[in-house]
Image (cartoon, rainbow, N blue to C red):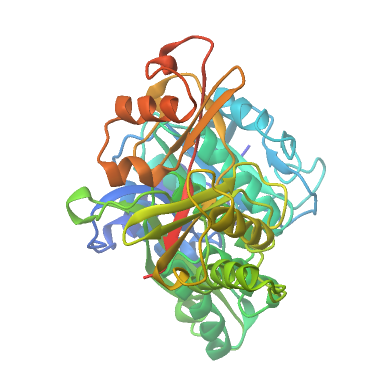
Length: 468
């Protein structure tokens, strides 16, 4: 049933349809080109935020998305799990919207925190039902045809939940013709000027695709967003699926609508997209939300750790409040001298906080790569440091799942295993078969071993950055 029809939006189908049409007609061209992977939309009553939301939904009107993953926050109850609605459809005045049960099941089996549940979706006997997901559906019904949804409600605002959901979506959605919609309003019930200041912080993070900074500032109270966790999850997934740009399309608050500026709520529409190929410079890997400060801190840590090890000194202790640097992540440190490889060691699996992984990998790359003699103190100044922060590897059944430039490859057969990072194929300008052959060679296997049924092929991606 349409639990919020007649409250947040019209219950009459004709009135609702006309209202959305009017909002969409008032949208100006966003002036960008590329593939839209995600949207961020507000969820207040349509008279307050409908025009803002229309600026996002107009960007996908008429496009061929088979499934829309809608990620919304819970306003009605707290729960730790990530809840996918366990029913078959949502009803709005414009008709039913069916759940993509097959895709939902694929998400649920990926991680124990993602579950089928009515929590956050429906509370039996309650006068108040969650609106943040439902309110997105009529817009989707107006701009898309023949689509299903995966309706997700997040019960907490923890970064760890956003990371789980973002990475789970990225593992399942490739080649699914899917759109991700994050539902969120911004600051709540502040005077107009204070609200604008808070909301500008969110807008700045979105425009810079700084999902880590956004999460940290929400946690610190520097800004507000009731759907902060859904936004961060959508950004993580979108980046891993190829989005390299974000654009805030329109911002306003309730004071702009009513004229009452004493206590307002902020609304924003944004899109996450992959820039058109003719405008995009190809770069290996993906973005995982490391800020420029995080990257510089890790590069400095790697170099300082090597310097201290060569002098026989203990490296300085790294203290960081960054959630990213304290996550458990696999990572590689690559050293080059005059553009030639001088050492590369790392860890695929995540066993320690990222900063500790970088320290250990840096020492190993400099002193213990069996292909090279140890780096000397004298030559260190001629060496450049590059870091690859990895996503968890996943097994693939078809090589068509591998995307050159985005994915690194792990080949496993028996006791043999070989790995090549995503940037290797890009730097060497290899096609897919060549990339697979060289990974087999790295594993000590025949070049065509990737075609053997007993050979396992795993892929991963990475955020890659280095010293200038």
